[in-house]
Amino acid sequence: MIGQTLNATLIYQFINIDSAFKQGPRSLPGETYMPPKLNRLQHIALKVRDLEKSLSFYVDILGFRVIEHIDQIDPAKTDYGYTRKMRFISCTNEHHVVNLTEIGAEFIPPNQPPPKNSRTLMNYGLHHYAFLVDGKNEFNEWVEYLKSKNVEFVRGPLVHSPTHPEGDGSPGENRAMYFCDPDGNAIEICCDMMQLGDDDQVDPAWHAERIRQDGYSPEEVGLPPINR
Ligand SMILES: [Fe+2]
Image (cartoon, rainbow, N blue to C red):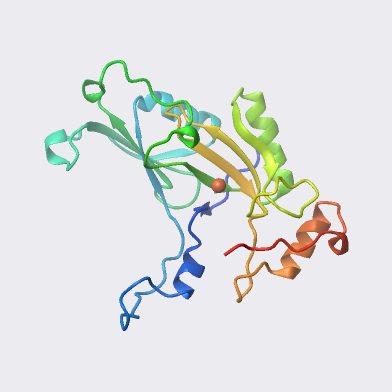
């Protein structure tokens, strides 16, 4: 198994929860109360068609551990009624980071193969989800490891940045690679997600250090603008 494990932090890319709450809730005038802030995304639950296939991917390739299983769910006792099996799997010291719920074979409509890549589907729901690794070296190690396992990248590896010399022009500053699980759910592994200051702009000290670590001069690489 690869020496580097996926970082404890599961990144939810599309909503910066901290900054969303600093801007205040979108509510009626006078309604300003917000409960204590949400810390971070903690787990994702995925509906899968073949639990064994999914475990071969998440456990055997990505290095998750199966923490707990349920094998005899009575579909009549759930609010969705299509499953008998669940696996709670983790890459951290938390009980589960991913929850795999198998759709029983008897509930899968015939002639409906799973999608190849959730990022390309024009429907509601998951686009992709992401795991963080410590830095560029760990990121590159995962690139080589996944290649050795014949995991196909559906995008990247690349750098999401409008100013980084290797950047693709998109926001985030993170290095990213994208691939899919057996049900077509797109997964990202990333590092170097942009760190923000109190003003919700890029933290200049973080940016300078990141650019330096990538072998470039911070004086020659502009701060990435943030389009609000
Ligand atoms: Fe992402």
